[in-house]
Image: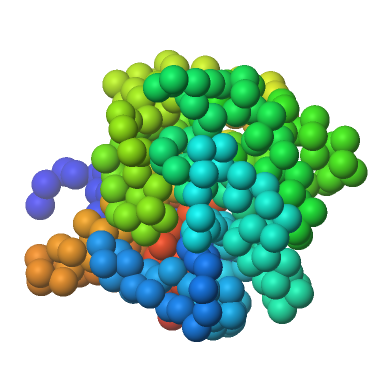
Length: 328
Ligand code: PBG
């Protein structure tokens, strides 16, 4: 016998004990499901790079909302895919626009669901950039006026929360002011604060038909070499009035989820993006990994890093795994 006194394995000897000493716990209330709503009727179109994810027409989105609600996921983040796009992205603030009608319908049919509206122009502009162009550049301050207008139209349509994902400077302050001026003082803002220019968004851009027609998003989304700058963005958004801040993507950015959690006095959301989902799905389909185990591990690691809220295309499955006691 050795004289070994400290034996960390003692607390790993059975499942009951492992669960008792577990440091990371989570529940369904913190899950958010991102969902695409498109024009048209009777549509449930699978997104090729995201098997199991669909673009729903408004008349069919209820099928998914019902399933989510049954599984215990109470929050969705809605993305609209319009039929027509123009230079100014005017469909984004049309009171009869795709996301506005979707919000209105969802609010009526599923009053218990919490509806988050993604606020960005890239799905609505013909050039695919997240703002108003001046030459080849996105004009920050001109874009702010549009963002404010979109936020108000989304709140008027029934959005419970506004989530700006455009990465323009000063947008949280402008959106807050516009919402307040229209009486929406209790509609929170969840700011995509540390949002990086990332190749992980490729499947989303296919899903939302929102890839930029020229150039890329590096003049507004962040350079992934930078961590101090991410914390600056987080601090600025909080100063401007963000109620919740976000780090995006999640999986390869856990260091920043942790740092944001330590810096911020507001809830931190982590968005596990389309490319993270697509990688797990593709590797599992090839038989290389277990989809269930990887989806669970990716989620737990985001929470362990410090996420309070987890936005994931696996939200429904995760809620079901929680129900089955595989995660929690
Ligand atoms: C809109 C937006 C994007 C995502 C969320 N909001 C795409 C982008 O910035 O290009 C990505 C989400 C995902 O990949 O799942 N700007």
